[in-house]
Length: 145
Image (tube, rainbow, N blue to C red):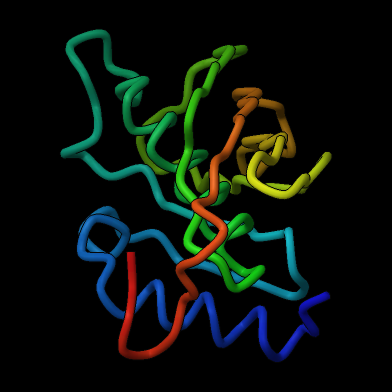
């Protein structure tokens, strides 16, 4: 079992090399192992031709929250399969919060649910992920995915 300080250390190590998360302006909060919250402001360069946020960016936010949740356990873990359901559009200026929680973790596979809400606490998307760990590689300050 990973304690909260170790979980935060894993998240810090992962974030150190995560250029995509920084480029999208995503902030990460980790309070405990198997959980993470990712927050992002919808910018003008994220809006598609229908004047809503591009669905791929909603997916990226949810995937980021999941990545931090599953990697706070100390083992390098990646998404093996993912599914998203878009429930309502995100718009310019919205603040989106993706909350990831671990539903199950076995020796190599894990299952996570991520809910994406806007600043009005409206559910924007539901994201379900199956993760896979090689069971050997650990996250540290010198060895990252």
